[in-house]
Length: 210
Figure 1 (cartoon, one colour):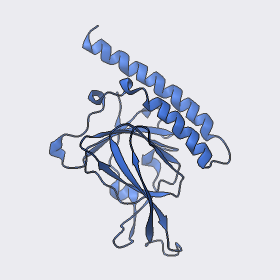
Figure 2: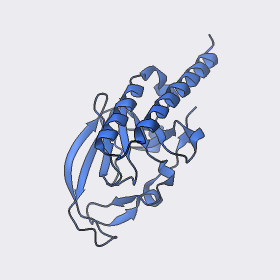
Figure 3: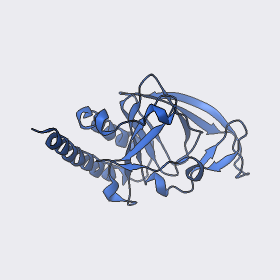
Figure 4: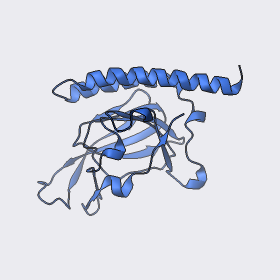
């Protein structure tokens, strides 16, 4: 079998397995009310997908070149054919050193590791929300997402990410709607409490996976 044929066969198999997983996840996500128990079921199904490590080789989802700097990242959309219609699955390939400011998603989200470590710091708001330009946050807990340890979020949950370890991540980030459509997300600068539009100030474009 030639290299090109093997690559094409792997990509075709990956598309099938991803499509099957997302079909099941859509069914789970239709449950009402959507709560943390439903989110846990979605996360478990995504963990099952992540167990197929052979379908997600580093060669197909390379991190940015070191010349792009510490913490550079590439986000691959795994179901681009779905466009803006419903759930969006990304595979994030991020170099160590990447950090983000605390932010929400305005939809549910879950992060599951194929390989690598991403520390998630989860925050609670301690202000009354009366000033839309300011948010005061307090650290609630820290979770290092890695194979065997995942994390999920409801729409208003706030977290920041910090890629640790000595190798890039390959982590699934799954959202109830595509990131690019979440125009009302907020980010918070911890030092000042200043609230910003997260997508407008922080979001980089995604790439479509092969």
